[in-house]
Image (tube, rainbow, N blue to C red):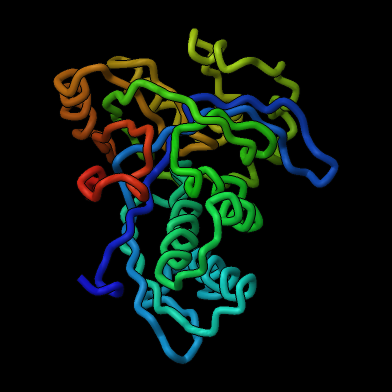
Length: 285
């Protein structure tokens, strides 16, 4: 397979917990969160261009090409390294936008990792994470590639091993505006910091939950329906809600019941990102 034909996965992530412990002077919120990947992915292809241009095969509707995170990531690498070649990026967009799954950030991270290899730039993973942070707070964890306990704005990462359970995910028919949630006056911003052990023993709150449910009642409805089968939680600022299951049979029962009403996905939690794992670990939606 040629370099231009290879497909690079960009997996979704879940926030298994999200606490807001403060706010920086620049407006960014200080967080404690836990990231785990799931085997639902966008897929990217990179075709070399001798012209030096960076472009998209098919721009996302409503997103100017120069603002697309994959284009910004590629141009950032060129700027950082002086690489003179170009690339045409094809994105097979499977992950829903505005769902709290990190699709755009994951696409950017996969672009950084893929082009670092394809262009033989030799940048370390730590350097790619630092570059990714300039594109968005969630980009570093996708470059990091392992389930993580995260602090700061989400960029201070420590590996954590989490049971790789089955996941049933509901995407309500709404697009949650993350900036709107983090700007809400009634958002909790003073949660007490906890230790990793507190999470593993059951502290799994999401401080965005109340604000999201107030502004997007359909998310609250999805949580209620999913809670009939499992502890239902919000990932990030949503809109997606998820439940974890210890067996495929239990997950499939919930999936089969919920898909009669909702847009539902059945997935598997992963501690190692499909970006770094064998290709088989990434499932098409």
